[in-house]
Every structure is written in C-alpha cells, then in structure tokens.
Image (tube, rainbow, N blue to C red; front, side, top):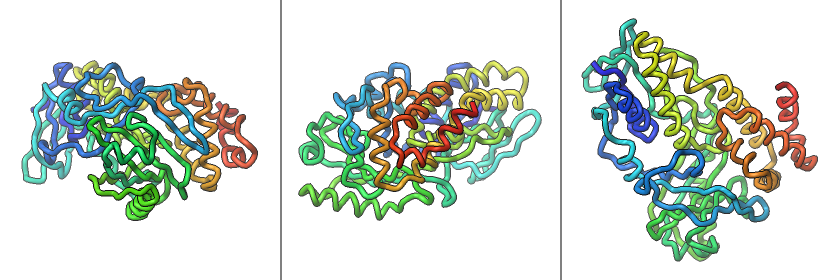
Amino acid sequence: MADVVIAGGGPAGRALARACARRGLATVLIDPAPGRRWRATYGLWADELPALPESAVACAPSTTLAFGTGPHVLDRQYLVMDNAGLREWLDGGYDVVAGTVSGVDHGRRGSSVRLEDGRVLATGLYVDATGARPRGDRYEQTAFGVVLPAEDALRLVDSPDTAVFMDWRKTESGFLYVLPLGDGTVLVEETSLARKPGLPLDVLAARLRARLRAAGLTSHGPEERVRIVLDLPVPRRGRTVPFGAAAALVHPATGYSVATSVRLAEPVADAVAQAWDRGPAAASSAAQGALWPSSARTVHALRRHGLRALCGMPPELVPVFFDLFFTLPTRLQRAFTSGREDVPETAEAMSALFRMSPRQVRKHLIGWRALRRSR
C-alpha cells in the first residue's frame, strides 16, 4: 500500500511526488505516458521560485519587454524552462506507474484507485494533478504559436535575446508573445488573454500567419497550441486532494500556474507529513488547508474580479489598461501576478490602477473600488 498516489505526470504532479517522497512518504505517480516529452513551453518569473538548477533553465532573456500602446522594460528576470532538465530535477524518490485512473473509492482507512486496465492501487491519500478540463462556460486563455529561427524573429523583435511578455500593438483582441528558447530559436505566439468560450485556435493561427506574412515570414517551424481554463473557483474540500490546475492554481488573469504548483509542493507535502499519524482524512484536510488558506482565497477572488473587468473592456481600451499596469512599481506588479497570499499588496495594486486610469477605463474597473472599500 502506498502512502500517497498522485495522478498526473506533469510538472505539478511530479513536484508534489518529489516533495512527498523527500518527507519519507511512500509515493506513487500515475502517468498515462511516462516516457512522453513535455511539449509545452513553460515560462516563469525567477522571483517566484527558489534558485533552480542550471539544467532546468533553457534561457534567461537579457531583457523582457511589454507593450500596451508603447514599450515598457520589465524589472523582473523572466526564465524559460528546459523541460528535460526540469523533469530530471523533479524526478526521483517515487515510483511511476503507467496508466489512467478510471475511478477512486474512499474509505475510512484509505482509498482504492482503479486504473482503466483493471489494476487497483491502495493508498492513504489520493491526489488529482491531471489538470483542468476545458469547458465552454469558463473563461479560457488560448494561443497558437510557431517556433522560428532567431534570425527570422529579428523581423519582430530587436534582439534574439529579448522576451516580449505581451505586445498589444496591431492586434484585434489579443497580444503577441515572443520568447527566445535558448537553442537558436524563438517562439512567436498569438494569444487571446481571456474569453468565454476561448477564442478558437484556428482564428489565432490565421492571425499569426497574417502577422508573419506582413513581416515577410512564413510559419514553417514547430507549432504550439495552448488552451487554459482561467476562472475555476476554489475547490470544495473532499477526500481527493486536487493539485496544480485541477486545484484552481492557474492565475485567473494571466494563465500561469507552473511556478505556483512547484512552489506549493513543499508546504503541501509538509502538511500531509505532519498530519499523517491522524489518518487519511486529516492528511487530506491538511493538504487542502495548505493549498487554500483564507488569504489565498481572498486574493483568488480579487484576481477573478480582475479577469471579469478585463473581459468587459472594449478591445481598444485593453492596451491602455496594460500601459498603466506596467507603469506600476515592480512590487505591485509582482503582487498582482505572483503574490498569491498577499492581500494588502494585491488590493493596493488594484486600487492604484483604478486611481491612475482615465474615465473610460475606470467605469470598467468600478467594482475594484467597491471591493477595496469592503476590505
């Protein structure tokens, strides 16, 4: 019998499996395809995590820019993960089982995890890290990207070592994301920040190809398709512990979750280990308490409100909004994008944006002031 069984072999699941194993818990990770490479591109802010090993970082761009209507140099180090290196760092100490979970039965003394091939795994604690399923009644971020040689990307950016976090110029209702990958190539991605339902990928692909044609380029490299559910509510507590995107750890206004999941793996594993002697139900409750303390719930609600305000703006005002956001002090930018439990700084960032905004933007942010006064 395993102490912990985790379904989902992405960065979130493997980070938690590693953390649990390091605390002496017999841990099993269930992955439908353990040998499959991670094909997604993972970018994150360096200040969101403790120091990563060099092998886990593919690129640390020298400059990170953002454009609303004009340019902003961001005073935060952006990193691109080396997927093989990140996975190697997160591997070790736990067993990996190839399979797909078909059902889970919870009992007083533990749980039985049923796999599609008929096998059953007994465990004290079951964790679902299989991600969030796209649904038409939720806001989604969608993107279509292509990998270009760095010399081709120079027609879109001034330097092959420059990351463009978002560029709202010359777009209909989305932005361009440009990311050097550290191997002489650059990912260029047409992104719809948030929409319900998500903007279809074929629409984004057509926009990107038109953008590239206008620059004299063709989209002849590897392609990337992205679809992220943004506005999941905080999960209700139960015996199954959700983790990663399944636990609503995706930032509602940015779509980022990998750094948050990796960072939270350690405190969640600590909570499980400390509660272990009190039984499976106590361990499950402790894990979910570590995931969603009251401060994190409050920040999540503020971020979801920010998502709805952004989605309610006319497209021509969104670049104006981001011009204002990227003029905030770096600590307030960091608070809103990365301060998951920092209620005062998140509220201050939103309040400052409201005060700075012109009248036509303020009327779409009017609820922010009400939220701020209610705290």
